[in-house]
Image (cartoon, rainbow, N blue to C red):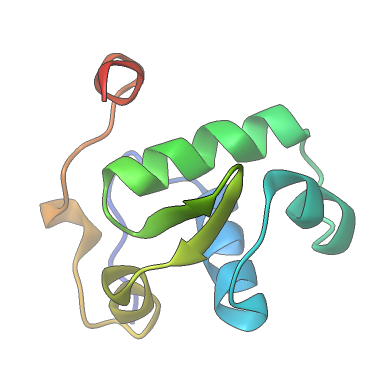
Length: 94
């Protein structure tokens, strides 16, 4: 059972699941292939939040991959409440 943090949104789960199934992706790829129902900008913002929390990592340009912690979160082995809390201010300063 996954244990999400208060700051996480359903979109975050979908992004993590997409990266798990595809191994890597850009916000553009996710918007076109995963039918997330949100804009590329929203996906990009959530990827930055997930990166701050250590659940995804940038690999090249705008591409991200799932981290080991991200995989463990999907497998229910990590409680996201104990990950760093991303805020817009923290992410932008990061």
